[in-house]
Amino acid sequence: TEKTSDDTTATAVAVGLRQGKVVIAVRDSPGFYTTRILTTMVFELVRLLQEGTDPKRLDKLAKQFGFPVGIVTLIDEIGLDVIAHIMTELTEAFGERFSGGSVDLVRDLVRAGFLGRKTGKGIFIYEKNSKNRSVNPGYVKILKKYGVKPEKSFSDDDKILRMVSRFVNETVLCLENKIIRNILEGNVGAV
Image 1 (tube, rainbow, N blue to C red):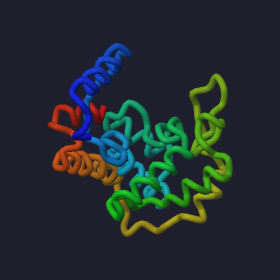
Image 2 (cartoon, rainbow, N blue to C red):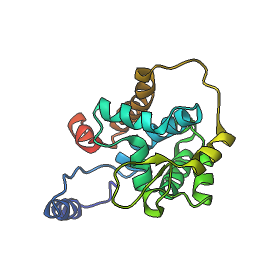
Image 3 (cartoon, rainbow, N blue to C red):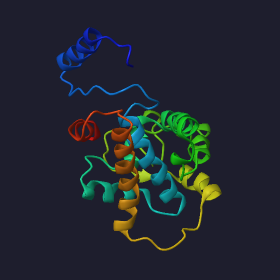
């Protein structure tokens, strides 16, 4: 916040650097920076899943675009319980801007015990000593309750652009609202 002393900020940055982290200082705000930009993309991801897009296909598209890991895999890694909480909190903080995919779908997955990698099942099934993941049939069953008909047919390029556009738009809003100080910090935080 504006009340944080320069010494406190410098100490926090030094701790991060000693841990081998790349550090950016951001202004206090719900979700700070990285969580905010990721969550807008997650909302669009969930919407694409509701529209019937295969999770493995979405992961492949994200990696082809340049993400180090597929976005579906990422939310399973973070934990669907954590994702549901973040989606709820940021919707309360920012309203309609954080919408699209159904938070209730994610909550139902959590209620069914599908938390992601940490429980062995999320959207994907995680088996020990295997990098191959299959889509969780339990996820597919729950998804049926939340399926929506897309407004039109979307190409793979459209699908990745839908997710990435939300990510980029929120980055610009964070810059405009001085959550991040400049584009360079935005780029560093987005990696």
